Amino acid sequence: MPLPSLPPSLSRLQPLLLPLLLAAVAGLVMMGAMFSGKEQQVHQLGHQLQQANQQIEELGGQNQELTKQTRALQADKKTLEERLASLQSQLTAASSDLERVRTSASELKAQLESMTGERDRLRGQLSGMTDDRDEVKRKLAHTEDEKAELGRSLGRLRDRFAFLDRDYRELSEKVSKLQANPPALASVASVTGPAGGNGGSSPAVAPMPSTLAQASVELPPIIVRKDQAGMATPVRGRILEVNQPHNFVVVDKGSADGVRVGMVFDLIRGSDAVGRAMVVRVRPQLSACDIVRTKTPGPVQVGDLVVQGGS
View (cartoon, rainbow, N blue to C red):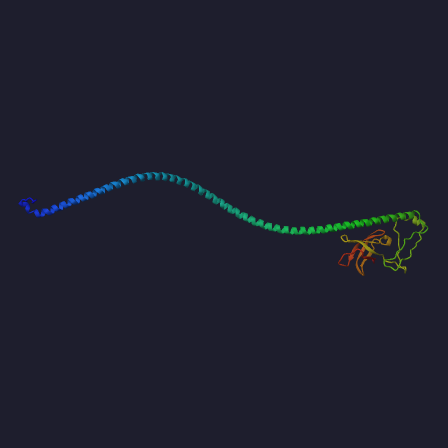
């Protein structure tokens, strides 16, 4: 189809109008494309806005939940702050108590050390007292043994002195009978020789007036010992009993043998002199003597020989 002809005034503008028209068409096409793109963007933005609203609603719910949680946490925080203040007060009190306990512990430690020293001292004293007790027990046992031995010795001595008292009473009765019925001549006791001598000696006879015999009192018989040459012989005998705790001995010679209180005996064992004893009590057949001196480290023994010595 041919283009319409233009007026001559416009024919001169035709070369300029064609590019303008083409530019306008191109602009319209571009505007359509742009509008279509914008419309799609608007649709996308609407969809995004809808999603954003949903998110806002969700965030609003979450915000309400977080607000509740925040309030609960604030309440818990207040409770915890109050509890913290209480704990701080308790901690302060506990610190004061701990300081007092430390002071008490120091005092108790000092007391414990003092008590430990006292215990050690008491243990030492107890050990010493135990040793003393054991020593006392040993001494007590030894004393009991000595007591038993003394009891046995005392029993034997009592038996011997009972025999002596019996002999003394018999002799007293004989003397009384002699005084009641005096003979023409005074009775003379038989004379025996010293132990280990060369033989017996003849009896010594002494006349006694009847009036003197009747007026006499109870006296042990006077015995004069003489050897074959007419000299006085020292009394000899043996030890029958030894009382070591009381330091005396019993000899088998008495007043009937010429022993008297204050007489001194030499104690002989074998060929050696082992001590001296002094007569302190006399019976007719026995005498008790205190040991005045010993020369041997061991005790005097039963069976040792006694010989009359010088005063």
